[in-house]
Amino acid sequence: MGPTPRAARALVLLAGFYLLGLFLLAALAAADWAAAVHTPGPFALKVFIVSAVLALPIVRGMFMLRTPPYEDVPGVRVDESREPRLWQTVRDIAQQVGTRAPDEILLTGDVNAAVSEDSRLLGLAGGTRRLRIGLPLMTGLSESGLRAVLAHEMGHYGNADTRLAAISERGRVHVLRTVAHFEERAGAKVSKERARQEKKAAAAVAKGRKAKEVDTTGTGVTYRAMARLYTAYGKFYLRATLSGSRRAEFAADVAAARIAGRDATSSALREIPVIDAAHDFYLNCYATLGVDAGLLPPPGEFLGGFRHLLAARHEELDALRGELPTEPVSPYDSHPPIAERVARIEALPDDGRASDPVRPSLSLLADADRSFAAVEETVLTPAALGLRRLDWPELVHAAMSVQTERSAQRFGALALGTAGGEDTSPRGTDGGGGTPGHGADADGTPGHGADADGTPGHGADADGTPGHGADADGTPGHGADARPGADADADRTSRPEADPEGDGAGAATLGALLDAIDAGALWRIAERLPRSAEAAAAHGRAAREFARPQLRAGLSQLVSAEYLRQGRARWQLSWAESAALELPYGHVDELPAALEAAVADRPDTGPLRALLEPVAAPETSTPAQAPSPGPTA
Image (cartoon, rainbow, N blue to C red; front, side, top):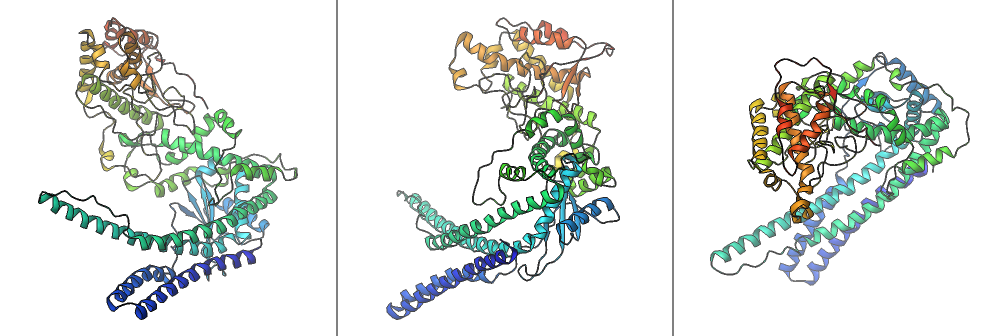
């Protein structure tokens, strides 16, 4: 369908909204006339009032003609003097598509590329064109892949999709506004009636009478009936306009294949879901790892560090590329499923451009590091920009040390019964590890912490060695909000790198727990920990077997925190797998047996106490890394 028929259809659908409003206003006027002619004066007055109240949202929806203004997406506008190669590439592609190039290019911090246009006269006249390109998307795409994406976006300009979107958007906005007005009035009427009935019920109780149950079933029914009419039309409107949007995506894909090549377009479509999943994983497990401790990576590395992850995990990402995401299909989708788009492109004839040279698309930028730093300034909130900056190795060690200390204290509070031990920290990271797209456990496998029945989660490995950054008290990990623009709480800017309770509190907790174990209280401690129904019903040896892994994992957290307090262990950054805690030489082999002895049927804390005995001078031998299985995809 060409631009003219699509424009005519959009105008007819928009006119349908106004026709529905006129029909309803005519129906209300007819009701007013009938009431005036055939009913007594007081009843007619009520009808007039109801009609006026119902007509107001209809009239507001019809005559509030302004659509929402262009949303200023956080990013950096770059002109041709700053990014000549990028602008030249965009202009060349626009010329090949046969359309006018954008007037502005905006570099953003998301995995996306999009075009918009400030059209006039309901889309009949063009306006300022804007192209948004996400730096994370450029980080993951080759130059040929980015050219395919840009050709797709220029295809939207060439097909007049951005101009016609103004008409469709206006209709959607008007329908939603009108429905919202009716729902708002219905909600206000229900609230008022509920308050009236509750007040009446309270008065009845005060007089010693039985209060009636509050019932607002019939309240606001006329408003909701009107809202349902507009909702029904809105669904029809969305189905009609969004089906056109999906066809426009297919047409833009064909334009991309014609300009950039079939294989480059197919590869880019396959790559985008992988980049998106990997970027979410990076934000959760690396970029925001230190936010809860008041820390961020160096300027430019909040976005630019994504390059390190992609380079280190290419094998895992290759596995993800082999399977296209399965998406539920809905008539209200604006884009077709990615698998269908790839299938259509790959069904095109071979154009012989499969061997185009592969260069990173960031090479189109004059200075990628400067661009990362500039965009970061616009994406992060002022509170986040005020956090302390550390290089990646120091950041991982400081952030994971804080998380380990807090996890250990939570377990200690549970075990000793001094507090509820509830995990109140934000969720989302496992200390820089796992598998992209899955939120991984401490050992690099997907999961969610210690199970309720006490099986080891991601606080420690199955053998009891220190894990990689999650809790051992049955709660998930520690991280922070992964969104790049997420607000950092005000208190995060002033948090120290170490736990505020310092060495004394943690060491005392571990010592008290070991003393309690020596006093024969191990299995009473186990009863304080979270348990599944099956574990709670077990007795004797079965109950001990349920509890033992969780006790071992929690004790491992306390031991890890003690090593860190003594300065004898260090968290090590890894872009390829989970962050790992390096222990003193030989301890990685001795610690599992010492933990097993401490939670045995006849506990012995001696080996563990011996390992934790502070040394007089720093050990000079090379520390051994605690073993951890590799990540799984």
